[in-house]
Length: 308
Image (cartoon, rainbow, N blue to C red):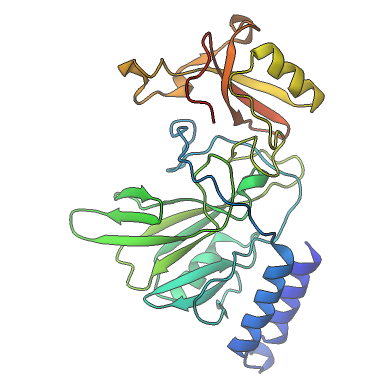
């Protein structure tokens, strides 16, 4: 547990109703915002690209599977809403924002029951899951979905609907995670009419397998700032050796843009054996691997016509 999280918990204990002290929302808001400003860095301008890797995971939005080694407190960036109010289970903090409520994660290691308890206190049927993720996805919202309902992802939020009702879940921006779909937070309508499941990323513990991985060339990742597109497999292998990164697997790239077969391309159905990948082939892009310092490469015998 970090000093910031200890400080935050000490503050909450000082305002525990069990000790007959009523927490002042304004004071708590100022304290939380102070911690937030000291524990989060100013994000770079996000590239805002939608990832094409939809079929490599079981998560409703894209991500391949990877991670970090330190447990960090996950507290979302401040919003323009009202003061932060700690939930009764002390796992989440909420800020009223018009007809919406902005949610901040206070305890990333809380039992899921505590998250549900805090949401239920606001009358919201939300199931929040925290999954070990690669560094660029730590503290970000990775997906929003709803059992039995359709989710339509847009740049400013997600529409969740069925034949009867529609809910609009807004995103809170301010993060850069390369070419992956992720956001700094979520704003939920107070009149939410259906169940919603939200996944956030957290740092992986030592030895823990990454359940969600991001763009390995994004900020904080093992290949930060490295452009692999259109380099040969031999050149990429040399770069990876220098950075002590291993190749977990190879995927065949989709057909050339002129081909109709590229639509709905499922990478998991096009895994290549390492011995079948010549060093003269080209790397189109890289996915994060399941473990620290590992990647998967998308390759083909021709260079990509659409490098990042």
